Image (cartoon, rainbow, N blue to C red; front, side, top):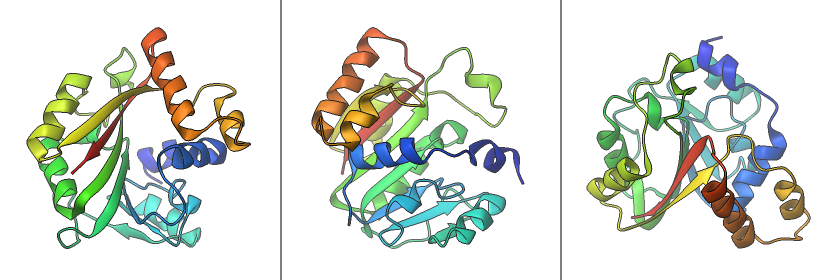
Length: 203
């Protein structure tokens, strides 16, 4: 098993379920770029296609009966123009030497008014602990990438890597809405230091 698939094959069902429900709904057609072992795909395996360059991770994902594709070349997605309504990518951008080309490929496979949800690590003191990281991204650089790739609307959120205690529980039992949960995360990001950034962009 590779370094990256081993690192990310961690039981995180509750967080992935919360994360999925926060930004998507059942039945959404989604391309998951950097799907790793399939933790996100299993939230709605009938409607999510995963892709990853790590064959070890793909083998694990396929054992979980999900639609996962091994892609050797991350610069070119194996899909036609305007194929997907949604693209999700988590922990991928910081590993790429040519992030703009990657963003343009996402825009290419997204339909008009299609949406991208992209998660990346913040440039903090722990960023280089992962030797596979290539370059960090800030809010400013993410905004520029989204703009240069052709996205016309976008929002940025400070986001913790492992969630905020209690919010997932309240959201799970519908005590708070997705909109309020996002607002809580946004406010916490303003007050406390968070580990990640989320870009929500519309083509």
